[in-house]
Image (cartoon, rainbow over all chains, first blue to last red; front, side, top):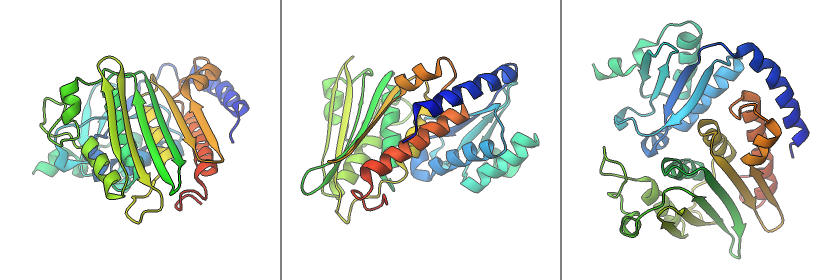
Amino acid sequence: MKSIKELEAIRERALKEIAIRENEGKTRIVVGMATCGIAAGAKPVMNAFVEELNKRNIHNVSVAMTGCIGVCRFEPIAEVIEPNGEKTTYVKLNPEKARRIVAEHIVNGRPVIEYTIGAAQD
Amino acid sequence: MKDLSMHILDIAQNSVRAEADHIIISLTAEGRPRILKIVISDNGRGMEPDFLEKVTDPFTTSRKSRHVGLGIPLLKQSAELAGGNFSIKSAVNEGTEVCATFPVDSVDRIPAGNIPEALTLLVASHPGITWEFRFASECEHFELNLAEVREVLKGVPITNNHVLEWIQNTLDDGFKTVFGGVLDEVN
């Protein structure tokens, strides 16, 4: 069983890291996780985002779940919301696409157009 | 739903939507023949009696944008297909308790899936809620209360990657300790 001591050590380490990161704007990734999303496979997609961000040591991006976005046939859906408010809606995701979004959109600032809702509706 | 972790993720979000700030998710393996009892209880808004009566109907929902609410009916179906039971209690301003039982050794029982992972996703998305997770079998039991974690962290956010990793590992250990050898899919 993991110990409270480990948690305290994590706390010490985090306090140092937080001091450095206070002023960065956060990009948010919001994954649809209502019944439609879960049934379509959104859980592995959300995990892929979290793992890929951790793997690349990216700390200024938060990943959260949300309810039904309203276009269930396009689930799993994830929205990338930049600090300036700009929003990109990605649809029909899977873990591999999530990893590519982190690599190209988050790291390199280039949205993956072919995964967006715009591309899907054409 | 393919596995229990997905149902738990689904139903727990009902509690979040009901504005609960204390949600308890407990899994207990008990009885002969063994059953797995999943209980999700919250201190949220609760339901009016006539809504509660129809809540297992797939066309009953609190949503305004849709006329379909599948979370509860799907869980009820999974439980009953495995030969288990479903029940739900709720009272306005008191909260709701959803209970589903699954005979452990039924060939029709869906697998557990990665439950520690699902619970961690819930904490990561709703860190302000006091989550309590409890696992119990005849010989072992495990509990994790986010209020205690918050006390140790003293202001460091629960959403810190390392904290979430610690939470998932702790839940993983607890789950394996309690359900290893009890649920076939847990080694």
